Length: 396
Image 1 (cartoon, rainbow, N blue to C red):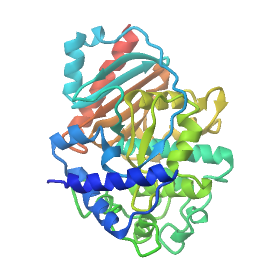
Image 2: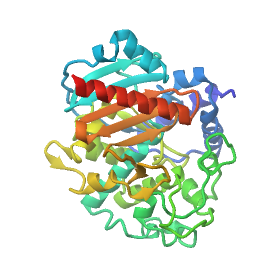
Image 3: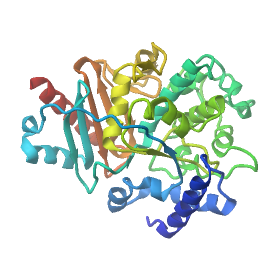
């Protein structure tokens, strides 16, 4: 399906002017909103060429807020894993088999492998898709420690009163984080009528937050807390909740709590919806090494510069299985996918991943342009690649 890049260029120019004039974005006009909604609906159906070209420049195609970096802290380097993966040819073949654009392996906080393909480069940013969910979750932890959120057992409506009277009445912050609200949802990326395809493109009544208004129309399916169903829209609500609780955009709060304190090397950009608020469930763009730094931040228990940013027990709770997803040995925490071996991951469609393996002190990042948003055979091949990389790191 074709996409109107001229319209995207006009939209990007509008946002460049808006963001240079003020620190936070402003809502789009009705005409701009219609253009944005039309273009956003097409991303899931881009061609392979469009994915390869555009995943590394999403912040120039769509409106986004800057996540300001501070003074970057260089990552140390250790012996390379390239020989253990079959040399240069073997490492490149591993990446090409999964359409990887970037592959980073950190062990003990040091770079053991860093490679780029598909025209991607170290100074460029790549979209995260749902990897952003794990960052949004971490900002809940930061807001909890800062006192902006009182308890994960608070009702969501205490922070988003617009949901009073909807199926989200009675749902807790914890149930949003674990996607166990019981509200009906369809996350089929191939279905243009699914909720995930419609959540950012459905017009809202005047004066209403578009995502909140959309989510408020959804019916209850099962009692809250009784069943896990993956819902990108609910992470969007988590993002709205954090913004309301802190009085800051997700981008600004991420910069304040993690990006600057941990020494990320480059600004990131976080896409916004038509309201001007960040999309909590998707679409941060950052460099390969900065994704690795975020994984290392979590591996180190949520500390930066000697300061505990997240609650002491947050990482342990967030990366433990809090919900049964119906797959043996796997579960879901606070927006993290968990494994039976104690590893956990932030995952995004088209092959984005931050894999954290505390037992082996490993962080593995893959940035990719898979030919499909999701596919069992691609996920299995990536799992095999992670196992191969882990074995190489442990054998050395």
